[in-house]
Image (cartoon, rainbow, N blue to C red; front, side):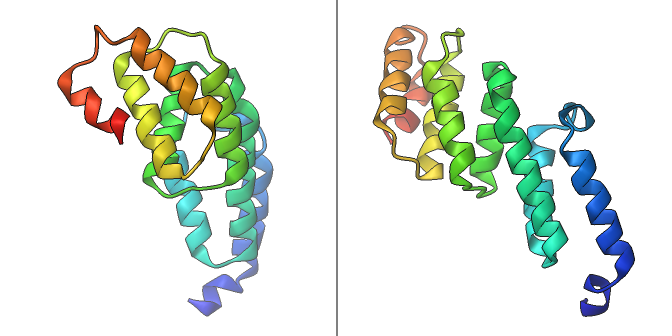
Length: 152
């Protein structure tokens, strides 16, 4: 394992991957789940360039998330929460995007947002107030299965 980490080819590959990762169009079609798994895998490699790659991926997503629709935003938020990606900058921007959005969202997205933000550990009253308003606005559409995650 140590021989692999010191291989100059790995370093060169990771540097090329860092450059490619900074261009949103290069990964725009990658699923949020795959992106989250890539970030986690890069962090587990134990190489400085791999860690830098994971930071670039998170930073690029953080910069671009304001341009995504709420459904796609929910995919990233859910994937990051599920895989324990707790980078504060991402979660703060994601919270702002969700709290400030007027885009119509389904009751299931409201539930997904509550659950993911709870898992992230983010404590932002304005976010939870906005999500509560959304949930109340969708009260007639909420199924019994939606209620427990909202109350958690």
